Image (cartoon, rainbow, N blue to C red):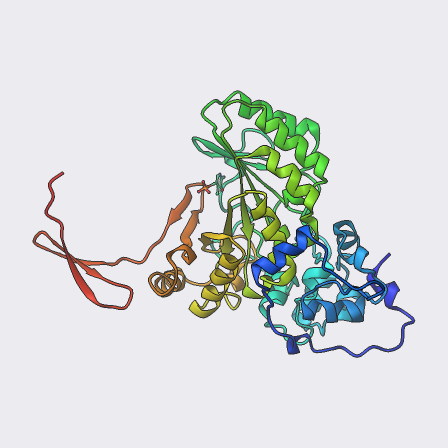
Length: 426
Ligand SMILES: *Cc1c(COP(=O)(O)O)cnc(C)c1O
């Protein structure tokens, strides 16, 4: 069933201005978690209202009026009803020429697809809104600017087996699938994602497991993609069990954007399955504080309750999160979901990403604006993933202003000057 035809023939609808809704609605975490284990007490016969982020509920009412609570909360339904055609998008959003032209282009680009959940966070009227810019293509992504490349990190050259990248001595990146529920327009792996070339087949993954098994120096496997959490439980479990069967694998990690774009995927069954494969860590992709909504808080809470240490990864994006205020709100948002900010990435020079990239100086300014000004736990490590395959290189503000004899002259977060007597001999 598709969104558009579902809606055809309905009474003319008014576009509600979704921006009237509060930007985010993080419930108290404990309230969110309790709901997982105990159904809310309702009087017999009383209508149970499913808890939803208000602006997402408003979107659902207009564009998916026939969807039941059970359907909306079913991740398969969310996937089947992804918004991916020009006709669907033009019904839901006042498209600009830049968006319209990009959507008419069909070949040679990262596909467009947005889950109904995430679409509920997109502004219909403001083309500069952060969430909208991240998922609706524009003509700017069709340009290749100087310095840009399809594979700037040189992943293909460090790939001994199709879909496996072995860059660091003790750990590998395994691309489980090239499928994502929602395609970010700044995707670092847009050359492979959504192309149907990296299938989660037993044959391809079996070759990757064999490589890992024959390299005892590998102790950490990072599952990425595409989004590994878009695989069915059985398929994901087969991958995790196959990795766990390799004695030298100490840690398994999963990189995913599912809690932000498809929180319905995180079910009690998934959490129960995952916890069998500890030590299992997860890196959750978050880009903007509006993503820290009720549904996502609940999904992250289930993963945390399954004992999975959660870290965040964020790409620094111009006009999306490139200010101290927005980044701080995002880091506070993820901390409230029990997610430790892990990496802030300088945007890779992927083809067609110029409109998303800002300067490294801006990134350093943001880290300077966080360190000391908020919880140390809220400060991610800012890195450049070095073009050519050099790996992640940290870029940090320099707080050492001078050396005066044996004294180090230091500047603190508030700009005060302090001295440390660095007199020990090594
Ligand atoms: C990011 C990445 C890793 C993991 O790096 P950590 O700093 O350990 O999180 C491993 N391999 C590749 C190819 C990567 O891009």
